[in-house]
Length: 372
Ligand SMILES: Nc1nc2c(c(=O)[nH]1)N[C@H]1C(S)=C(S)[C@@H](COP(=O)(O)O)O[C@H]1N2
Ligand SMILES: [Mo]
Image (cartoon, rainbow, N blue to C red):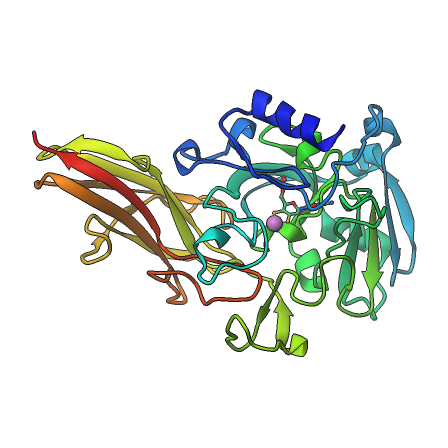
């Protein structure tokens, strides 16, 4: 489908998503639409680096996943093999684009100017990648995976849009899946049908959609958007006009602790002297969440929010707090999550980096308190 037609279709079928002006299809949610523990598909963000591939209507029968490279027994799995020969498991996990909240960085950086809506939490079903790797028997030289899909760049060159991979330890982790279902239904094409990687705690770019081949590598994968500054952070801080030392950049392997206020919505009004309930979700990468603090004065004073118990390590967790603002006028609500290692969200933005990744600055919602 042509790109504009596809964008129009998304605008029509998912009217609550904000489509970003770009060659590829990219659309994000508004924070107030992310108020459910499992994000409905209508408001589940879409991030394509290239052109959505044509997926055959009979993919259920025809799709194959090849695993080769540093393995004793290369194999080609039919989709049905995955479903019948391996245990199907489910993992609830947050999927967040590394570029989410990029728009807040100053000076601005290259890349889609995402606001806060390139994040979602889904219930993913599939097989453990570890089980597939056990079936092909990794050689001792196996240290990284490389993932391939049929989607190509938008420039007409026919080059692959994205080929990312995972360190073997993460590929073997029990939460890492080759998934075929999301929120109780088969994956849709926009979200990677018939097969995608689920790599909880990793940036969304590692969650390869339309997965058709995994090559086991004897070194860090160097596929499309694995090298240079792509999805990498400098180990030591850099400024906007610095000459970059690319050897100092490392692949992002963990998403930082973060939270999102889902109610009230930006621009809200509420009467003075009445309860003002605030809700949202908090999540972190591989380090568990510890607490969420909230503020109704733009971050001057903080209160510990009620944080729902963890059900699954990579799911987001609801937090709540009820304010009772007494004075009419403008008000700024903030939420700030902290993980058990003591990392907490910065009050401004995260450390500036050339591509604007991993901004976990506190979320602020501005509103107005009205005279009672
Ligand atoms: N094949 C392929 N997989 C991909 C991408 C892509 O462009 N092509 N985008 C990645 C990025 S950057 C993100 S953030 C997630 C977004 O997943 P979603 O579109 O299901 O929300 O998919 C990842 N997987
Ligand atoms: Mo992304």
